[in-house]
Length: 131
Image 1 (cartoon, rainbow, N blue to C red):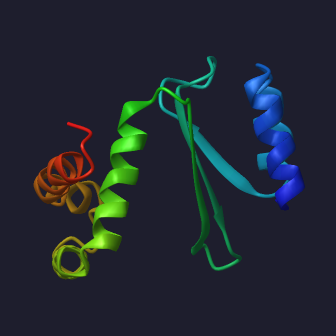
Image 2 (cartoon, rainbow, N blue to C red; image 1 turned 120 degrees about the horizontal axis):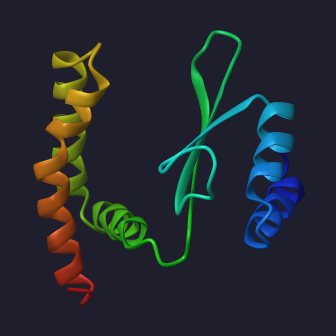
């Protein structure tokens, strides 16, 4: 999906043409999409994955409604890690450890990072005056 097509996609989504837009762009460009609340209603959050011919993820796009608070928390977390490389290094180490421990269990891998992410997100909110 090229930049101008992606812009058109989001514009159509914002006009309420979510399912038509998903069908035409994701199938055409081999993206897989998954809404959070079912396939028959527009979700407040959806993610898209594109894989190469070997099945490896090459693109991962998150699409959220503007008032989806959890999205903004994720950006605060990201920004805090950028600003604090020592914390980013700890997160990297944690992710590498859990990648080895839970190589074939994505759910446990994700859950294992939760406490660290929540703690750092709270620190980020305080740091950026968002708490």
